[in-house]
Amino acid sequence: MNRTLLTSGIAALILSGCHGLSEDDSTVFRYNESANLSSLDPAHARSLEPMWATDQLFDGLVELTPELEVKPLVAKSFYVDESGMRWTFVLRDDVYFPAVEGVPGLESGRRVVAEDVVFSLNRIRDPKVASSGRWILDPVDASAPGDGILALGMDTVVITLHQPFPPFLGLLTTAYANIVAFEAVEHFGEDFRSHPVGCGPFKLAWWLEDVACVMHRNESYWEKDEAGNALPYLEAVHIDFASDMGAEYQGLMQGKYDFMSGLHAAYMEELLDEEGGLRLEHAGTVRLEKVPFLKTDYIGITLQPDSASEWNPLQDVRIRRAMSLAIDRDGIARHLRRGAVVPTQDFVPPSLLGELRHAHAPKQELVAAGLLVDSVRLDYPNEWDDVMLSTTSDYTDLCAALQFQWRAIGLNVEVEVLSSSTHREQVAQGNSMMFRKSWLADYADAENFLGLFHSKNFAPSGPNYTRYNEPAFDSTLDQAMLESDLESRLQSYRSMNALIAMDLPVISLFHDQVTHFVRNDISGWVISPVNRLDLRRVRKGND
Image (cartoon, rainbow, N blue to C red; front, side, top):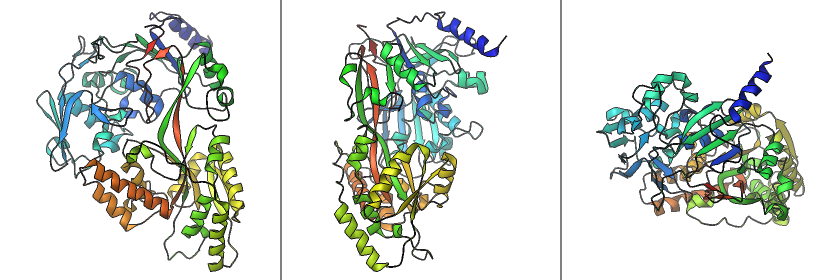
């Protein structure tokens, strides 16, 4: 029999309702994931797709609120000692793994204890697991008792760091730090990726790769709402894996899917008006929810030491400032991104600096930019070589717009379109004069953005792709990591962000936004700046 037909037949049988899910079931939340899933193991939740799925199946010690505050989850409380290096977490006593038939120790479920936390964290730093999240435990002191992660009885976990690192709690909000059941890991081995067991609001019912994944409500989930009702409200989550974004859009409009994330050319103009708002004809069906994303798109400049034999105009900060002034950020946001991005001149998103609103983007100032270019030409009257801007095919429209605007002030810029792998390698090795790139926060602290510019993080071993080297910046960031007072640390962050805006190793363009299209019958929807998916309080219809 044809393998495709066989797979389709199995899929049809499963999707027909053999697990109690019908197409009109108002307790089932449905969405599509065009990128598919490679694993349901939180140790490998590197991108948003597996994060969204694993967040339904697992909980961690702490979680990040939409206001970017860290609050307890499986840990009912936490505190750090005066040294800033010893973190203590006290666990709740009502968190349970669900029952799993055929897995010794889990046949009836069991309570989550401190040793589970120790096992889960040690697992992601085990080289055999090869977790992409191993880095979140880099601050942990492996020479301390318990290799830096110690269980004290059933209810207490102590984590010891090499040195103070205030953002450490934020690292524990990542999906990597979710708590797994060691019995399931040992029983399933490598197949734990498709047989995950955690203590989250849902549990896996089945997953047919490339077709669909269904999760059922975890009856033993501990969390309740303010009225004492058990969470989650939904009975199930159903995820399809259709790669056609047009089909996903149609599914949303027809009610097959309950929400859709992001913007795509297949439906962007159909859904949004020129100002980036939802078109009126769709208001009766869906609503648009947006929040600034912790992500910055920028143009990076590879800085050379003063002794470099070949001078190019980008090494003069006046040219970089002129290029920044020449950019029509508002126009780019409106015409190229349908208002789905927030123009900016700051590298760090304002929410991470303790600021509630985005500052207005700088206005395009071609006259001032041209005068700066003229002043540099007086100092360097010889003919300049063209400037080369490298990018990938996804951003040729943006780079063409920048090229046009820079030409207006007398700067000739050539755009080099590379494959993603080649572009990444050239930037890391310092072989790109200028490059388009973006930075997405791994955790909600400004240090995650500012660390890109510390001299110890020079690429290729670190993310300092520009080779920016400023002792005042380094010392301020180092000092901020010793500061336990949040407001004092934020003040240091603001001064470093201002220094980057003055020296311009990068020319910031815009902050992205989390964009969700949600069916109008969905309530309890939560949208956060890190774009995690929280379905605990979601209801459909009148439920």
